[in-house]
Image (cartoon, rainbow, N blue to C red; front, side):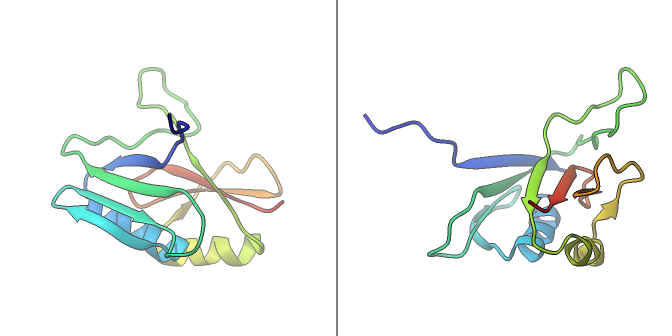
Length: 125
């Protein structure tokens, strides 16, 4: 029997193609498959990395982070993206459509929100 392995993380959004486009630009990934309400992207051939998929959901509600109001949609997961230049990659992410979070809990991490409102972190080792 082949080992079990995690292959893809799927993020919901009101527009799967728009959000996929953001992560394509941010990560330098390539489209692997797409349907009208679903897109799979991953590292270019010959490189390693986790694939991401995006599912269109008409009733999508962005998560709230940090959580302030009980009963609001809370963050259930976030992506950690390792970078070499925190300031430069933060500026590039914002230029591509991300929004910098007001609350920044660590000096070596920048919390941002993608265009659909999912939090993600850029960090330096």
